[in-house]
Image (cartoon, rainbow, N blue to C red; front, side, top):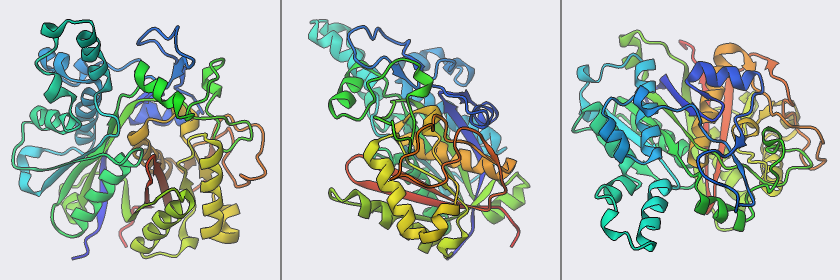
Length: 410
């Protein structure tokens, strides 16, 4: 069975905007969401900045205040963002056979805010004050459980995916395959992350994955720039509603785009090979020639090595045309929300289709001779785009690439 899969709903919780309109406005204007950390005291930490979502109010999406209190932040993000996408798709779950629905969530770090809070009680000897919700709310699967409970649905298909920074895009790739093969008709898929905690920041610093600069936070993340010296940790969520084409047409709902292909790969140390395999598989799965791609949403976390490797692989696959394809990195504006990044990249690409505008890679000031492609520097560009390749790379060797196309009847 070979069915067409489209996206009909979008949900966004990002450091530079909640909701697709606010998110897109910030991207188009090159507005960064990276700022000084406010959720805890950073006095003893070398890194004092992050992509915090400071204007998020879970009570705007979840009525039960007791439920909110027991939930970890990533679960609050997941539930709120999934509901946002469902509403955007005008999807009435009561009218759908739930056995034909998949809810898929990608998460890489789980409930570290809750885990660190409860562990602090433990080491202080306050054993009796440890929350009875700690275990069920702290598990990676908690996000899916909370979504199901909030939506009040049963007998649906569920999946929690944890493959590092590729988790969110992987969850969408899985949903795409399940619909395409006829196993389900509708999927609510995406990612949620809340990794901005003292312990995780120290861990990322130890792994030399973060920039140690703190002045002018909005200028620290600079993918492909010669002066880049590491990424910026961030948080948020992104969800989309995927649907079999005929289902979407029958509902007469808005169709954002069509998913054509997905590719993933695992690797052992050889990052270049993994990037290349995932990109090639997605193009092959889409059944198109590389020459069709006219926009690339790069993984590009502002890492000196990874940005170079991704550039190198793009040039290898697309050859001379690589220099004519706009390559953008929204991490310049949102930092690195780990497993959510690929989903937010997808949303940015979808909105580029809708608006005929490509969002910029901001903070690009000093060209790197090793990164010499068209990175849409600093200002958005008016340009009609039809095919987009989205890349995601995960710590530990996972790689995911997704290809989407502007929707057309043919």
